[in-house]
Length: 294
Image (cartoon, rainbow, N blue to C red; front, side, top):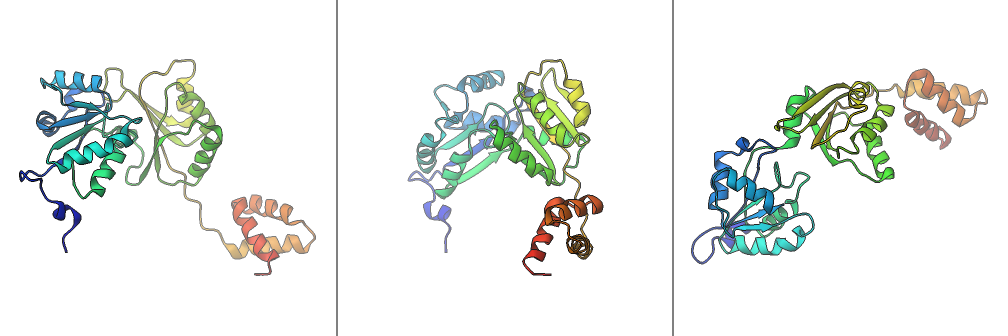
């Protein structure tokens, strides 16, 4: 049985098209790889998040964009998918770039890649700079297991929900934040985890690159009374895994209080505080008792 890609095969001319996701410099133009440069030079069309930024990149490397640059950003990406698929199917090599870093990672590109792949056509990459990996690599925090959270939600209720998820997230957390909202976000985080290790990386690979490391409280203090500008990536240590609880001990403590006439609510609060167990875990066991399960 042949896969979808082999069934489609090359176009009538025998040329097989492809979409190449090209990583571009975060700031230092010298970080463009020689392979990425070759792809941009040879591609039939280059779809760009911002054609003005891409023209600057092309000029810095002596490339001549001619009429090959096309716009593909967050507002028109869905509409452009059909054209990209058609071009690849027709045998063209299409390069996809964002303003900086790797397309599709909190930048336009995810939908186009999915559309081309779903059509059974070739998707490749000229890998390179990524703000996520770059910040993580210099953070000094655990990097074997991490989670990328994109931009922190702006809506208050969604933001609180995200922070509640991070209460239990044991992997290193990487996220983006607007410089104008950074301090407010860190203040909200510091109220929950004042001693959690943190690294704020600003203006990666640029002239004014800055790396701040410390606890949330310490980093927040270093940002007080100053204007934050530029692109920001935040790397935060994961939560310490909660030790396994002795459910039999918790049940016995809850049973003793309830049998003595203590309300379920007060018994749960008392046991949670005395044994250092999460309130929700004690409450779950107390509900099981009420249901007659023990």
